[in-house]
Length: 184
Image (cartoon, rainbow, N blue to C red; front, side):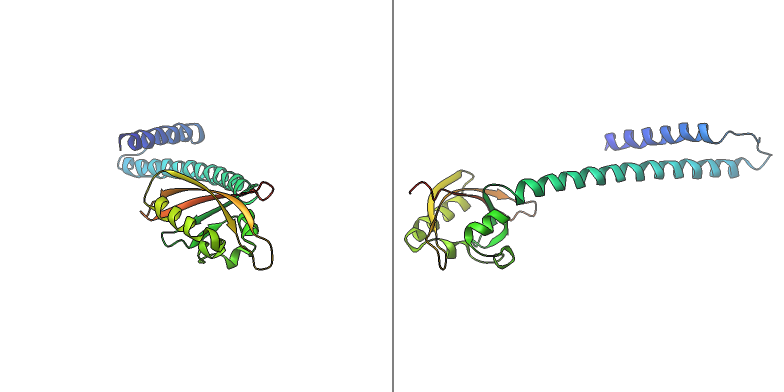
């Protein structure tokens, strides 16, 4: 709260300083016009404060857009698959390499159970890992086979960790690494 007051005072001082440089006071107020001149002064200061805040917001927006673009590059074009599962093991979010590993278009994956992509022989292992990870803050790692409709299974290294989102929802963040070249 104190920091906010200091910031507002600093903004006002800067606006006052800019106003003094912009508008020289050449006219002395006549008796009874003091209030009018004070109000005009306040309006000018407020206008400058708003312009300064607007410029600051524009700069913040530019920085946010740059940050978002860096995030998109890192997330969407990573060499590994990233996905987020909710408490019911449903896919909430997935990057392009993750969708490629599962062999399905990304828009068709959202809301589907991740377990449906795990090979039958690894279902019990996956279910145990999922239930353990959803209850713990530890990072879990395992090797699994992903099944595809017409292809041979893909061997993956799966790394997952539970996270609490701001809305208190628990999710699992998962990294999928294709290790097909090395046998499980």
